[in-house]
Amino acid sequence: PEWPAEFAALRSALAAILGPLALSIDHIGSTSVPGLGAKDIIDIQVTAAALAPEIVARLTAAGYRYGARSSHDHVPLGEDETPGLWAKLFFTEPEGVRRANVHVRIAGNPNQRYALLFRDYLRAHPNSARTVELIKREIAKRHADDMDAYYDIKDPVYDLIWDAAQDWARQ
Image 1 (cartoon, rainbow, N blue to C red):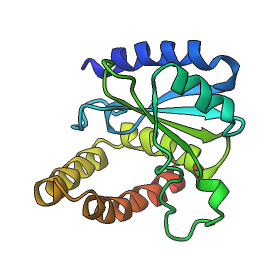
Image 2 (cartoon, rainbow, N blue to C red):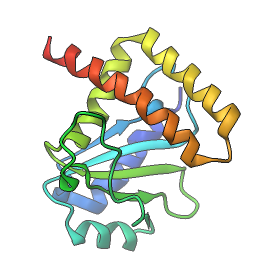
Image 3 (spheres, rainbow, N blue to C red):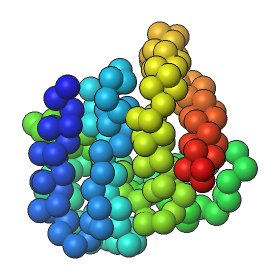
Image 4 (cartoon, rainbow, N blue to C red):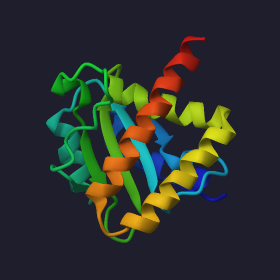
């Protein structure tokens, strides 16, 4: 129940750091879906006009840790694989601050829409949210120390939700 308030505090800090570079700052991921069990890490999406070096400079100056290895998102089957459409900047929280993952994505790109639509679909479909939670718990039981295996299973499951969410949004 504390996650929305914790996100709000993180959002305020990010807004102060990034100013107009952040077109929007949204709570995404499992912690953004009421009642959905999740790892205690707040996922945040910063929507930007571009993945500008100034974003990296400002966030790292504020103590956020830049994860250059996480420079793109998984591409769901059937989607345009153009790398720029799935590019992002990834940061984790500064030392001593509440655990958070900050994903900076370009406005209008499919990976930016994916995070918001996924969240909104699960909020509107509680049975799907509970199913996602069950799947994630089972994967974690079997692959807690193997992140590659975790994502090899989780990503295709999320792709199913992505397809359903897109149909739902069109309707």
